[in-house]
Length: 86
Image 1: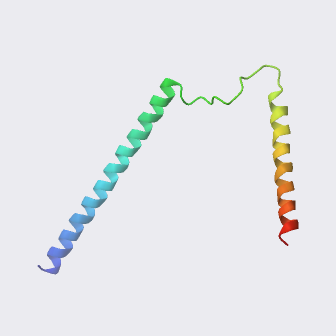
Image 2 (image 1 turned 90 degrees about the vertical axis):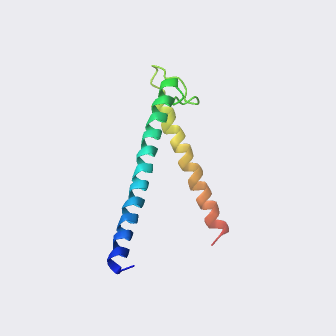
Image 3 (image 1 turned 90 degrees about the horizontal axis):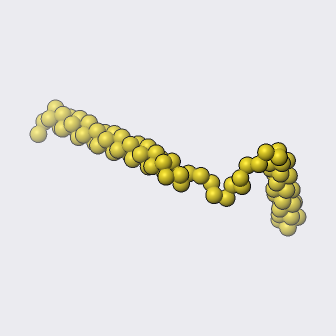
């Protein structure tokens, strides 16, 4: 087998391998897209833990208070960690 034949064979194998990978990626994209549409169609993409929206306007204030509480908890944890691990 000459060097030219080996290069030709390696080129064919390279293109074949890239084609297989590209084909798999196309199939993967199509499958994910179809699954997304199916999940959206049956309504499974709705967050069940999310409270129903009310017109009172209390939502943003409650979210801000929750964010403040989370920030305070993180700050307290970091402070305690720094005390125990100098």
